[in-house]
Image (cartoon, rainbow, N blue to C red):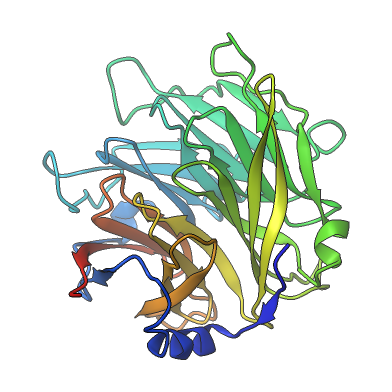
Length: 352
């Protein structure tokens, strides 16, 4: 594992201004300051929105509402672009199973969504109705529940590997900080409820890293990036950004090993999303900013290149969930002030 460094995000930003000699990927990602879409108001059915995920086609945006115990699905207006309807076209609400729905992810095939529900200790999978991209069968396709076998303890984030055969889940409590679940071969999109690997809190503690919170696979599937932050029930360790590298072991098995740790003091990191190109990642932290990082060529290191200030509208907490559209041209950000912002982003090749 690479040596960890103590860098506050603002110092990372300043550092990036003076790293002209670092081999970056020779392009820039610009974010339009004016959102293309703002989903808000009573008609939106938002209730403390957190996790967000675009369908593979980009025609649907699903939001996990932690206080609403619901998933709300928003249809894109037209065949392309970043404009989405303000009112959901479909809602799944379940006060028991979706209790504090904290994150949600579309499967790479687009036929399923899976929600990570913190207070019910549940992963709930829903299958899309035949012939519809927006409507889903409200009865769960499968559930992974509880601690004894599934090792779920306040799950807060979920991510599919690009191939769709692995699910990674972040737990806020307990020793099982990050779990990996494998798809059962030959089944109807079923997953083994027993994780095939766990990155433990004990392992993270060796590097003074707090509990896992938000996570995402790189677009090539070879790495898992995780945001960590302390919590009142798990106060030890510091906020951090970690990378775990995937190692293939043969026979369709693999193992993830921590390879890089960046510590950020007490900054309240929340969620993370990769741009489809793999050149950039976006992260939210609750002070009110979204930070866009640029990949340093031939490494797992990223430097801050720009930030977006999010209006907290008087709330103590700021942005929560974040997701890039599959085309990479739009970025969705959720906030606990009950609105979702969709920004247009543009990748421009830097002049040599």
